[in-house]
Image (cartoon, rainbow, N blue to C red; front, side):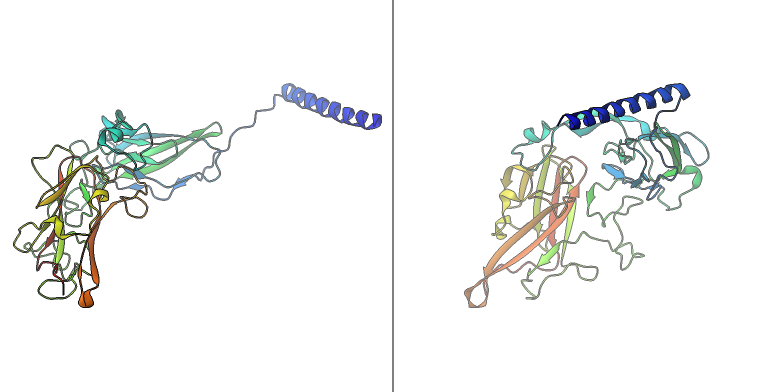
Length: 366
């Protein structure tokens, strides 16, 4: 037992002596301290950034190539293609930032607003992760979008370089391009010309100025009252289309759902008798009339990219479904459903209108 204690003591002394010798050598020979590693091959999946103004955009797939983390990122040498300095991207404006986690379980607008605050931020930044962010406060009044004629001139293109640093050194990633799109305040937005903001032409007849494109809902077993066939909404047949549009007279944070017949009269929402109005959207103070159903909501919709009972898979869009039932042959109930996955990025009073253009749905029993 005594012998074992001596062996362990001798091993411990040997380790201490070796450590002292190593420290002494470092001082004697002035050996450098170990530095972090930074790769010359760090890069991004793409250096062309094409955000849509008026909404928060997260961009950039960064590859650290085994560089030691954390890294420090800095946007430098922002310039146009002709050498003029770019300054509009770095204007400071108030933007919403979350101070507590939104989870979709909030029971009032006040509870939602208590979880975020307005904070002054540059319109365009690079985050600690290397991801770029363009805040929703960036609009076409502050940042000029790409030209309407689709020709992007080099001298009008914004370029910048990225300085990436750790204690191991500095690497510059040159010649990022920033080419923004005009605002599209909602999605789907195929009814908006992305260059001009005007009404988009019909994709099947783009040279015809009298024909337009429409937002198309999803339809399941919605039978036409006259034709007795399933209604459709596609490039060829547009029995039902959707309009997302602002309206006047709201309180600044209203969202309405309306349903319109071929004569542009509004359908009583009670016709859609199986719809779960209380959980349709994350909204409050529901108001139901013979022409619409309205909620108080917080914008944008959805508030964050998070899966909740009100969103589509992945949480990228709000998702609404309207359902009704009627008796089919044999007396059994048959169900019909239609709906839309959507986002609204601009605060205000908005209505989403489902227009049955050619005929009403069949509500009567067989």
